[in-house]
Image 1 (cartoon, rainbow over the protein chains, first blue to last red):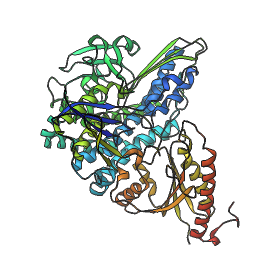
Image 2 (cartoon, chains in turn cyan, blue; image 1 turned 30 degrees about the vertical axis):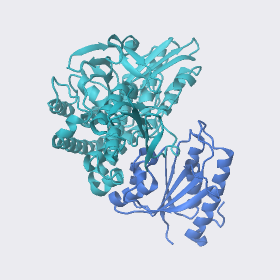
Image 3 (cartoon, rainbow over the protein chains, first blue to last red; image 1 turned 90 degrees about the vertical axis):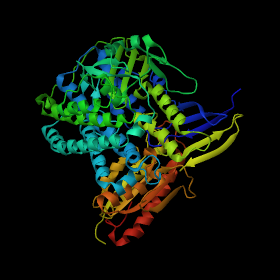
Image 4 (tube, chains in turn orange, yellow; image 1 turned 180 degrees about the vertical axis):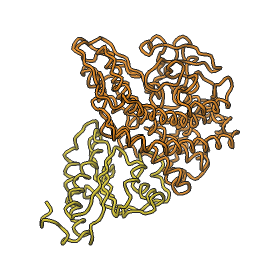
Length: 475
Length: 165
C-alpha cells in the first residue's frame, strides 16, 4: 500500500473569495493527487425559491461584489424570457454598455492589481513586495494606469446603475434609466487614454510571454476544448449562441443559449461545493472545457472591433491551428478583451440610439420558464428560472462562470504540484505558482464578509496516517 | 487652524450584519467633522480597494472606518495608521488595508494624508442587514470617543454653532 502525505494550501490569496488546495504526497515525496476545494456554500438557488421572479435582478448580484453586473444582466435576460418580451434597441445597448464597463473594470482588477505583480517581480520574489503596493513603488505608471482603467469601468457602472457595486439598472423588460448626452460625452472623452493604456499593457504582456517562454511552456500545460458566446462567429459578451470548439480547433457544437441543458451537464464531487460542468455528449471528464478570456478568444472566429481583431491575429500565432492553450496566455486574452470592451464602448456611445428614451416594454404574460446567458468576465454565466402562474420561483439553476473552469483549475494546480513539489518542504514560490494557476482563471468563489475574509495563507502537511507534520502561515 | 480636507472611508459588507459597521461609523464621523467647518469627502465600499487612493488627492487627513474581528476593550479602537512601503495587507483583495491605501497615495499621488483607523468590534457577521445590539452600542461608544478626539484635535474654538450634537 502506498503511503500518502497531504499538503494543504489554504486559502488562496488575491482571488475573489477563498479556496483551499490539498496536495497528496506519496511515500517517495512525489505528488499523487491534488485537489482545489471550494468550501463556500452560497445557497442562492435554494433560498430564492418562492420569491417573485422580478426580484431576481436585485437578489442575484449579491452573489458577487466583483461581477454583480453579470448576475444582474443574466437575471434580467431570464426575466425577459419569462415575460416573453424583447427589450428595445436602446435598452439592449444600455445593458451592453453597462456590461462593457463591468468587463473593463473586472479585467483591470484581475490583470493590474492581482496578476501583474507576479509577472513583474517574479513568482519567487518576496511576497511582501509582490503586490499592488510593491507595484506602485517600483512601477508607479503601470499601477496608476490599472487604477484609472478600473475606475473608468466602474464610473460607467455608476453612471447607469447609480453605484459601482450592486448597481440597479436592468429590470424585467428593459432598463430603468437612460443615458444623457453629457454623460455619454464624458465617457467618450476619457476613452482614448484608456485604450492607449490597455495597448501599453498588451505590449508588456507580449514582452513577458516572449521573454519567459520556458516558464510559459511548463506552467500547467493542458489542452482543452473552449467555450464562449459568439455572434455570427464573432466574439460576443452580451448576447449570442454558445459555441464549443475542440482542443484541436474544430467546432464541436454551437447551440442557442436556451438549449443549454441539452448540452451541458454538471458533475458533483464530494470534496467541493463547486460543480464540474461538462459537455454532455462527451461525458465527464472528457467533456470538460475552459471558459473566460482564453476560452472565448479561442472559441470565436474573429473579433468585430478592428484593434482587438488585429491583436487576436497576433495572439493566435502562439498556438497551433489557431488554438492557444498556454495558461499564462489568459492574461494576454484578458487584455485583448479589455481592448474589445473599450472599442465596443466607443461604438455603443457613437450610436444615436444610446441616448434614446424608449427604455422598457411591459407584458402581462408569465411564461413558466426563462433562461438568461451572458459572458461574465470569468466565463459563461447561466441563469435559469422556473415560475408558477403568479410568477413565484419554483426552481432556480445557476451555472456560474467559475464552475466551468473547475476541472481545468484542478488539473492546473495538479500540474504545478507535479512539476515543483518533491516532498513536504514547499517553497513559497511554488505555493505562489499554484495560486497563480487559480488567478489566471480569475475565479469568483464567494463574496466573503469583508472582516471575516482576513485570513492568512495556510499550508498544512500531513503524514500518511493523517498526523499533522507542519503548518505554515503566509501572513 | 484653517479648514482641512478630510477623507472618511467607510467599508464592509452591510448585508453581513456587523460587517456594515464601517458604513454607519463613516456617516457619524462625517457629521462630526463637518461641525468644525472642514471639507469632508465620504467614500464607502464593500471593500477597501486600490482606486480609493484617487480620493486622497489634496486630502489632509484620511479616517478609515471599519468593523473588526478583534474584541477591543472599549468596544472600539482609534489608532494612527502609517503607510506601508510593503506589507501583508496588500496581498489579498479582501484584506487590502488602510496602510496600503496610504502607501499607494505616497507612491502615486506624491502625498500621503495623515491616517487614522476607527474600528468597532463586531459581534456577528451573519446574513442580515442590521447591526447587532452589541455592535450598535459599540458604534455609539466609538462615535463618542471620536467626538472627544476630534474636539481636541481640531480645538474647541473651531466648533461651529457652539454645540456639537
